[in-house]
Image 1 (cartoon, rainbow over the protein chains, first blue to last red):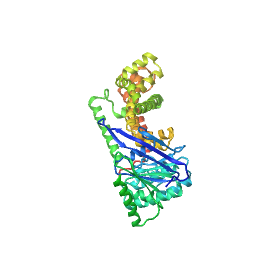
Image 2: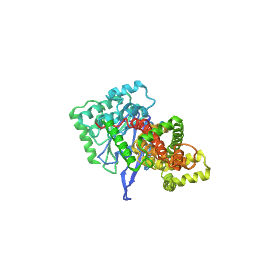
Image 3: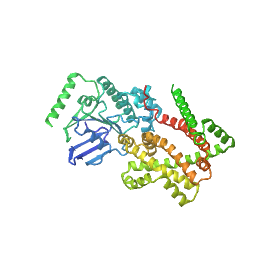
Image 4: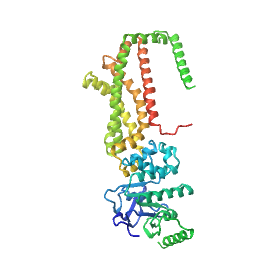
Length: 242
Length: 248
C-alpha cells in the first residue's frame, strides 16, 4: 500500500547500529532497515524476541542517536509512545499522569478517552493501585491525549491474558479509527500485527534487517480462521526465505 | 495503644530521672519538679520565649540556606559527572572539617556577627545535605526521564512532577537529620559568639554551675523540636508518600 495522503510521516533509513557491550566487544544489533510510513498508516514491525525491535524504536524516538543512517520525522515531530513497561509516575494519579503529558487536552477529549479505555472509574487512582492491564491502558490514554503525529507502541500487549489482549486490541482499533494516527506497532506476535496493521515489516533475527514487507487487505476487519491461516502462512514463508 | 506505649515510655524516663536525682543529689541532677518550676519561672519573665524564638529563627535560617544550596548542588553533582568530579574534593574537605573549626574561622574572619553565625551553621549542615541528595539524584529512574523527554514536558514540570517526587525520601532524610544537627550546632555558635539564644543562656548557666537552668532550656527546646517533627515534618512525609500503598 502506498502512503495515504501523499505526505509521509516517517522516513527511516538505518544502515547499521551496534552497541559496545561491557566486555568491550561491539554487538551488531541492526542491519539495513528502511521504510516510510504515510499519513494515518498503521504499520507493524514483527521480529523474534531480542532481534533489536526496541532499539529500533528508541532510534525512531530520538532516544538513541548513536547509529548510521537517518530518521526523518514530521516537522513538529510530536511522538507519542506506549512503552513496554507503562512508565507512569507512581506519585501522580491516573488523570494527572495523562494531563502532565498532554496539558493541551480538554476535559471532553479526556473523558471520551477514559471512557473508551474503561478508565473512567480509575481517574483518581494511583498507578500502584492498578493492575498491569489497567496501567497499560493509562499509558495508551497518555499517548493518545498527547495527539501525536506518530504513535509508537512497544509490545503493548505483552504479559496480558488473551481475553484482555482481545479487548485492548478492540479499544486500540477504535482509537485509531476514531482519530487516524500514524502508528508503528512493534511486536513479536504475528497475530497482533495481522489484527492491527495495514502493513507488516518482518525482521530477521539479530542483527535485524527487513526480510519481507506484507500489505494486509481490509485491515482491522474481522477475518475467518481460513483467511488468517493464509496470511500467517504467507508470513511464515517470507520468514523462512529471509 | 500507641499513645499508651509512648506515655509509658516517657513516664519511665521521668522515673529514672527522679531516681538518679535522689542518687547523685539535686546539685548535679535536679529533680523533674525543680526543672519544671524553673521552666515556668523563665516563661513568666518572658526570657524563655525570647531565647527560644531567637534560637528557632537561627535554626530556620541556617537550615533553609543549607537545604536549598545542598539540594541544588547535590542534584547537579548527582546528574552531571563533570560537576561531581570537580566538586567532590571540596565536599570531602567540608564533610571532614570539624564543626568547631568552621565556627571559629567564621567568627575570626567575619567577626562576631549574625551572618558569620548563620553561615557557620549552614556550612556544617551543607555537605551532609549534598551527599544525601546526590545519592537520590544518582538513583533517579532514567526510564521516567525518557518518558518526560518523549512527551516534551517543560523543565518545570519535570522538576516538580518527575524529579522531586523521586528525591522526596532523600529530602525527608536530609530534613530529619538536618534539623537535629542544625539546632545542636546553633547552640554552640550561640555559646561562642552570640549575646542571646538558648546556647548563650546555657553558657551562662554553665559558668554559674546552674544545672537546673541548663536542663530547663535544653528540655524546652527539645519540646519545641518535637512539636516541629510532629506537626511539620511528619505531615509533610505523609503528604509526599500518599501514593504509596499502605501496609494493611
